[in-house]
Image (cartoon, rainbow, N blue to C red; front, side):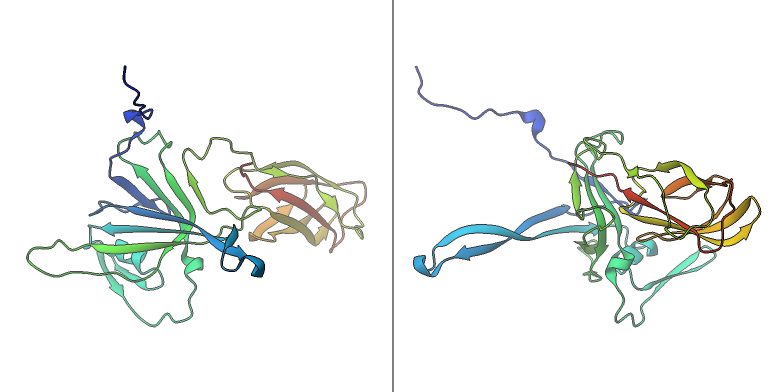
Length: 281
């Protein structure tokens, strides 16, 4: 009888596949070379004088993800805009060009969006192997070889930024994003302390995947008998539009209806709604 032991090997859990790279909803086409995901919990060492250089503990001091891809379709000017996000894609009918000018001081975070890596070994509907970066942008540098023996490719290094639309901020998700998702919520509307009108807000609805963690404010900017107009804005979303009293208001992040009361609204009357983005426990 053998005394050897063996690990529990499950070949079905192995992965060997290229992947599709999608950025801001656009398929970036073929890649050349491996797509590499680097994930790091940055650590700070805790020490005590009494133990010299001995490390007593490690505490997480940050989180970092970088992704390296090489885009093969270098003739597509749209891909250049992905790699160099602060520079300009020029379009004149069917003709396209790419223009580099001074962009000193521009924010890469302002250009960032959702980056998704999908293993081609799985059907589109199977997202169990997907890697999603909520807020990513390329760092604006690349090698572009010219020669008879090496194919051109746009090497891209993607940086990750914290997405503050949730609390705490979110970074990355590995797997199907619907698994364990807690739906977005919106609380009841709170009337401003100085309101003259006694109307209410009803039919409040939040949208998972769109509603942010923020405060929605509605402020009356035009009064009229049995009606009025409210300016709607979010502390994160910014301006969302104008709401008419008695008419359902629908935006990308929230919907509701402001109802007239027995006393009409005055300019300056307001309501606030606290919303919480969809998130995971």
